[in-house]
Length: 268
Image (cartoon, rainbow, N blue to C red; front, side):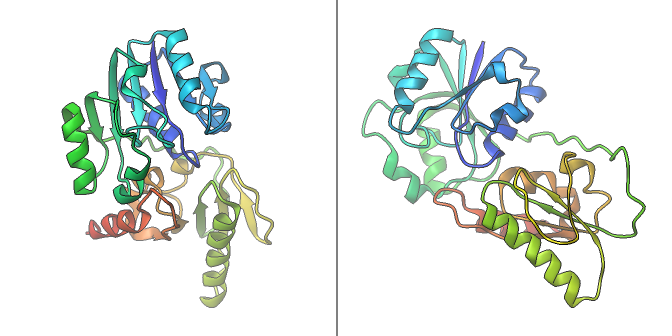
């Protein structure tokens, strides 16, 4: 048994876990998250949802005592998103998933003692230097790791000339802003694309069509793609950079502005 700890807003943390587990052939696992939507990505039987911030540490400790996993994976936040994790919680192997953090903001929640130590830290993107220094201090092994992305073709393609995509989850006002941006650009350029919205949030706008397929099925078909600066979305869009219009949304810990700059620096 392996336990993945993946709290955080949106579905990005959970997507990372799903991709990693599939890539490494991990089938027997449990996911702990504060996001009830985890049941959309995993069998509900393997999901435990944190009750609240105040009892998060106690809840995680109880799950670990109950399941007695061989390995405990911690995503993004070395001491948990609230500072709720302690090294003494779990005597077995703890591994870490490294995604870029605004380290000056995050270090405020680090406990003063009993910090988690890691067997292996898997780094999925470049970290801020102080973040990386911290991980190298507390991890026995640090390795770069490239997550795989599977692309499929849509089963039923509409008979239209031009498809635009809006891809975003989490906050309704952010999804609405991306949709409005796409509509404004289409109007200014005198275009009439078919605009598909890929989101768990419904937006009421004329000429916007909600699409339930994974967005990875449609990237190759789209001519423009509107999105935020989340890790997983930009990971998926690397082969399609020239189609992308990405907006950095404000986050306390996630540096979307840096990620978007880095993303476009690699356009050939």
